[in-house]
Each structure stands twice: as structure tokens, then as C-alpha cells.
Length: 247
Picture 1 (cartoon, rainbow, N blue to C red):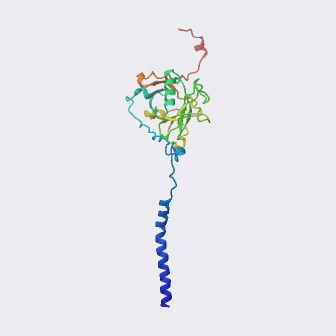
Picture 2 (cartoon, one colour):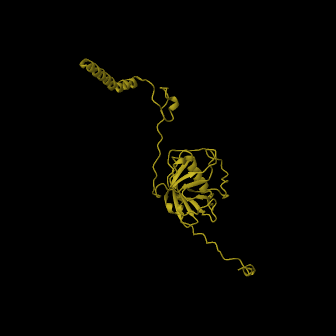
């Protein structure tokens, strides 16, 4: 009996030592494995080519919230709610889209254009001179410049149709983070002053009384705020008013 117990104990000891050695054996197997590592990024397809040029990782500048710095890259929107909003245009994120915004702004394209689609908790969309969401400028559509910058509160991004390369003049400003939009829409800027005015844009699809852009300009234009629009009169037009002599 003593011999049988000893033999059984010896077998258990050998099995235990073998189990302890398994991780080391597996690690040694991994060390001997010469499978090349996975390559992410622009050089992924050339991972087996030792002579392939290495593309440096693209960097994106951080947002400067001081509107006095590089005012030529500050988009100024004077709204019909009497407020002025300033947006930092990030040309290194999306150079073609920023250039389009500047070009249309200099042409007065955005002056008088409404925010035609404004969804509570989501975003305010504008930039369509027809106010229907179906229009744009006469310039050709832009090729997408998707980038990894997140759609956080205050993000200004380009609206588009189903095609990725269909952005033209319409844009939207995000009320709250919406990361599902990342790398699907071209993020080209951020509100750096008076996000509260964006929050006050009238909601609706379309709004009954939409907020609109009185004037769009660039910070380098140094234009003073325009006078607030005259409030619409609710007084009914009477026959006496129609027959009154002109001044």
C-alpha cells in the first residue's frame, strides 16, 4: 500500500511540473514564430516590402480658442437672434473644405441663409440658400476629407448627400457629442466663442420661424456686428393702412 501511494504521488508531481512548464513552452513557441506583425496605416499593403517608403504619421494641430490669433481662420457668423458666433477653421484638418467656406463667405453666399434643420440634442444645419436642404452653391462638390477629429459639442462639420464626395455648401454645428459621425463627415472647425448663441437657434425640420445668418465674415475683416434685424410686426394690415397716402 505504501508503495502504491508513493507511485501515485510521484505521477502527480510529474504532471504538475509538466503543467508549470506549459506557459514557458508556449512563450518559446511565440518567440520562434516568424509571422510578421500586423501593420496599420497607409503602409499596410507594403508591409512585406523592405524598400517601401515609410509615410510619417499625420498630425493635427490643436484648436486655438483665442480669436485674435490667425483671424483669417476665424469664421464669424452674425445671427438673427442678435448674437455673434466665432468658429475656428482648421485648414490642416480639411484644407479644401475650409477654402470653400472662405470663398463662399467672401462672396456673401451665406448672408441671409437660414438654419433649415435643427434637431434638439443633435445639431443645427444650414448653408442651403433655398432653405430646403436640397440646395447648394454653383461650385462643384468637394472630395471628402474625413479625419479622426471627434464630433464633440461645438464641432462644425460639412453636410453631404449619400455620396461621400457630395459636400458643397451646407454645414452643421453639433450641440452634443455624436461620435458616430466621426470619419463619415468632414470635420473642419469648432465653435470658439458664444456656443450659447448656437444653443439658442430655433428648432424644427424646418423651423416655423428659422434663425438665419445675417452676415458671415472672417475675423480678419474686422467688421462690427450689424444692427439687429427689425422684429416682424404682428399687427394686421387694415384698409386704412392700404389707403393711406405714401410719405
